[in-house]
Image (cartoon, rainbow, N blue to C red):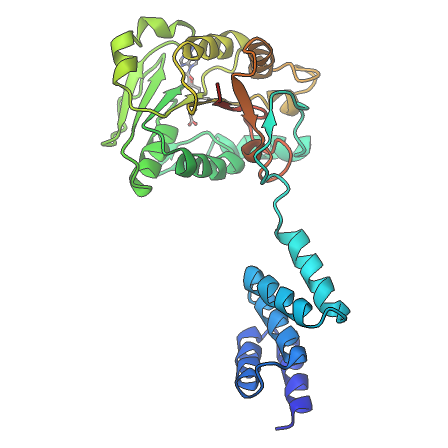
Length: 309
Ligand SMILES: C[S@@+](CC[C@H](N)C(=O)[O-])C[C@H]1O[C@@H](n2cnc3c(N)ncnc32)[C@H](O)[C@@H]1O
């Protein structure tokens, strides 16, 4: 078959979404003539069609280097670089940010209704899809020795954290506190305790703290009042070390119910603002997590804090 016919066939296969057949034909052609730029470009198109974007980008860059005058390769590189770059991937140190989420209120309200019916291994787990995806990123990177959760509810989140530790082969454990402790969920790495976030000194003593492996990841997910959030922040501020983390959940009540909490005044947001303004740069807001999917696309808007000093 002539090379022209081959190209035509490859393009037709791509149009018909028979991308693997197109890729096979391209590779057969390249075996005979590995340097042919037009077929290389078609290979990049096939790779994009099957979702191998990074390999396509690599190839497009090679074509651009070999033929700088070829606009289509440069354009492909530009398009792929733009689509593959995560705007939130920089590790910015931030202590002050806008408190609003980029997620529209209508979507937040719709998700909120389903979040309460979500179950993990049959146990209620009250987290939005963004946070279900963000916690694994954090755990994989941090490899926490101990996760301390305030607010267990049915135990689904503690179970989820315990499973992530197991799956990631992290030798850590989860201690989950609630005013109504969970009694019917079991996991080898999870312990449920009775405890009030406003009076943690009554249930977490110096010996307990000293026994917890670091780094520590504290997740405050109790009643989302200013009083509880600030109490948990203050209690742990005295015990956290650089490299430990504390997450204050559900500040985005400000975005869900702006009439109740105008201008970022949900309990968690008020507590976070006050805490951060008084801690002299000891913490940073982890923008790379808060903004991973879009600006503050998390229930924990501006609530992922890393102790840095
Ligand atoms: C939002 S739910 C926790 C959801 C759970 N972490 C999850 O993701 O599935 C809040 C829980 O906090 C508990 N709670 C409320 N006030 C509390 C406090 N002051 N101290 C500890 N727990 C509290 C409630 O009993 C409830 O179980």
